[in-house]
Amino acid sequence: MEIKDRILNAMKELAGKKGFHAVTTDELAAAGGVSKRTLYRYFASKDEIIEAVLNDLITGVERRVQSIVAGDAAPTDKLRGIVGAVLEGISFIEPRNLGDLQRYYPRLWEKIERFRANRVTLFKEVYLKGC
Image (cartoon, rainbow, N blue to C red; front, side):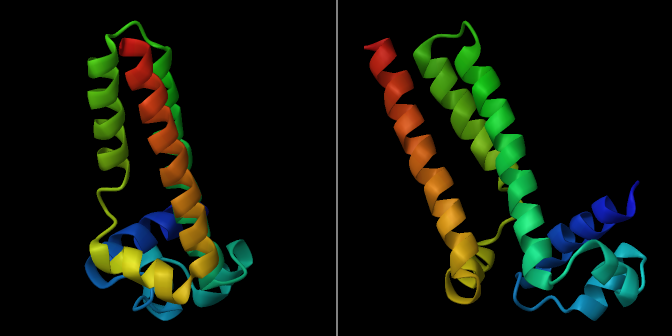
C-alpha cells in the first residue's frame, strides 16, 4: 500500500474512534507507520488530510451512484441502491465527525452539504422517472 493511502486509512480509522478534531498528527503518523516529516511531505496540513479522506469518500460514492443510475433497474431499486451506496460510503463517519466538520472545518462541511444536496436532487430525478 502506498504511503499516502496508509495515511488516509489511518485517518479514517482514528477519526472513526475519536473524531477528526481529536486526532493529532503524531498519532496519525504513528498509525500510518510513517514519521511526522513524511506525513507532511505528502500533506501540508491535517485539514488537507481530512479533505483527501472526504474527497475519496465522495468520489467512491459518486462512482457507485452513477453506476446505479445508469443501470436498468426499476426506479425503486435504483433508489435503494443509491441509499445503500451512500450509507456504505459514509459508514466510518460517526456523528461526532460531522459535528467536527461543522465546528472546526466549515469549508469541508460545505463540501459535504453540497454533495448531500446534489444527491437529494438525484433522488428526486430517479423517483420522478419512475412515476
